[in-house]
Length: 394
Image 1: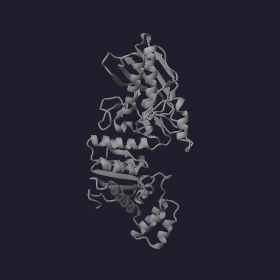
Image 2: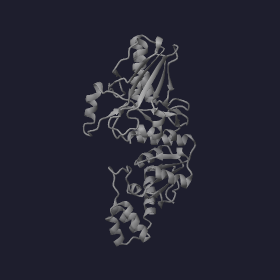
Image 3: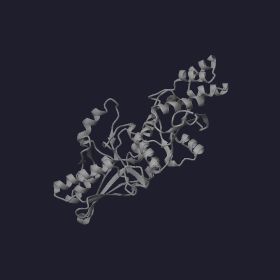
Image 4: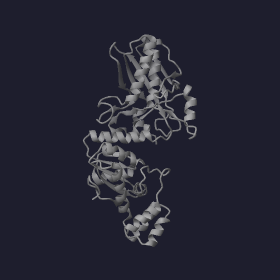
């Protein structure tokens, strides 16, 4: 899942305009259609609204310039201008392309009002856009959840429109997303302390289908929020079942839970640079057997359960050659685990311990103690490592 959705925010819709050829060529090899971030769409809506505030007319489509030079054109779905031109609102419907983004189709609006000269550009959260309530994010507590790059884009476009029409460029921008608070329940916003709606996200303006970069960014923000809250123990979990296991084991609060998914390497590399005292990694036995074998991306398309590796590991736990042979030819990792359980071979513990050792290798001596918990599909614990000391396994 795209973590513009997973991590916090959404976007709005757009026609492709002059960028159509470049985007098509960019992703020709994938056959997937890219889309636009919420930040790009909010910028387009702001540009149209401010233009209408100064001229009385909404440009439709409205063209903006993204950080990498693309110049997409966005069709407007909403045009509202108050009497006396005290405020103008424009809106677009998000097109996430072929990315599985929960905000695809959401209506993003921007309302622009004049402010006294010297006021600058002020951002407000309208309905469906969240407010930051916890430290650790790139925004101050109490600020609307409009991320730094979208803010910069909106300021730059306000300056351009102001310069074209001889206006001072002092405005209040209120960004809203229809049904944003409801959509945000499918994101990590609540855990990150963003309450009341979505975040307005995007660093390039373009949503690359099935991109993992936004998910990884959300993992990083989760670590930042936990550290800023003074937490010393966080858990990287592969899904909701493993989260429940960790909460039952350690009683960790929500903000200590990192929705790691398949990105074990992303968690470990970020924690290496931003240490916490204790990191627990919890997930399904098969996925964590991949980490034990040295894979940092646990997605099935990029790494597979290595049954011969499991057979070798089982030998270290007392498996005879007949059992090792059956493990090596097992249909699934779970079958290999069950074979070992029946024979009294602690394969779950062996996998957890090896996965912990691989995690410590990635951490490269960072002052982080690590333990690993393997679970089955029902959430039962099937393997544990000991908790390492800062110096290594114990």
